[in-house]
Length: 416
Ligand SMILES: Cc1cc2nc3c(=O)[nH]c(=O)nc-3n(C[C@H](O)[C@H](O)[C@H](O)COP(=O)(O)OP(=O)(O)OC[C@H]3O[C@@H](n4cnc5c(N)ncnc54)[C@H](O)[C@@H]3O)c2cc1C
Image (cartoon, rainbow, N blue to C red; front, side, top):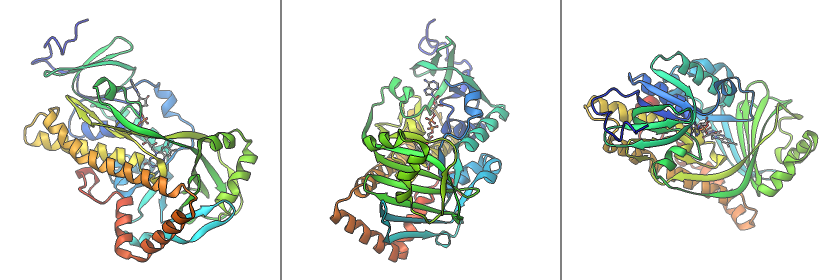
């Protein structure tokens, strides 16, 4: 079949939808809800069957959602569905650590009172967030969800079209790639990526423990990579334990009991006895950032635009910020009668997000290099650095506002 966009048949015709979002993970559905609230007809396409994603069991992933992300979810009507499963992060403690030695006394400590707007963030398991987003999408009349794989895309001045594995062809004004780190949308649009392998793997699981965590999140900077201990409801924590890939593979091959034996000296005994809650998972850690976030009639959001190290727990937060910024730019274009799918409008989104994201990716990359290291001079330097920051209220405050996603220009959906 001839490409209807290329042959100009789309001129003056109605498109199948205003916007097609490729990828129904987390960022895709969030964007669809934000755009539907503006009155746009949206189609989400995801290659995975819905049952697999909606009824997902705990997959070891939980998110540290920044306050700004919580605000976006509240505006989309999602927060009230998941709030009962979320745990507020009352405090964050970051310190140098070594197996068996406990944390260094020179540490960074952020307390709740340091942010007048409330807790800096919330911990939420992936399964609750995913389900709430998919249910909201199913209830929104302006959003259609297709379970199919995009295999081809083409763009002309008149419109864009997508070919699916089933043979279906869809026309639209704008394609948004929310299709993850190996974004086919970016590749088909000729957008190249920059990135590298950290040589680290994140070991992820949830633990039950004896003593209350009091809503405190911990980050121990170990020589092979950071260990994050993040509070979940019901005396449980989520851990993201980064190790050199070879060592991680050895740890992964251990039985549950032996795995805990290796973890215990790193974790410490401040929460009493620990045991596994559910399965263990591992994720290889890579940085991948798209060289451009937009092309003609194409925009990228979430991991499709940037996949980063989980050291600062900012991957999804950065994606949700893309969602809010793109929705903001599209809404404002509509208000002044501009074509929201034009490159001029899309470039506003890119200018807003690409610099922020590259800075965040560089900062997480630098922190990882600086902290995943046992060099005694670096160790002394970073210990003193953390002690100094801890003693400077103004510097601490700017760190807290950054972690809560409140610094810089906020998109409308992230304003209080
Ligand atoms: C160990 C670990 C811990 C993390 N912890 C945090 C944290 O604490 N806080 C935080 O903010 N972030 C965290 N992250 C990052 C977070 O998981 C990701 O940023 C987020 O899941 C990305 O969502 P997404 O919707 O952009 O992409 P994805 O979830 O990757 O979704 C992409 C979707 O696109 C679909 N797709 C792909 N290609 C096609 C195609 N051709 N046709 C149709 N569909 C297609 C796929 O089926 C998939 O459903 C963590 C990540 C890891 C690995």
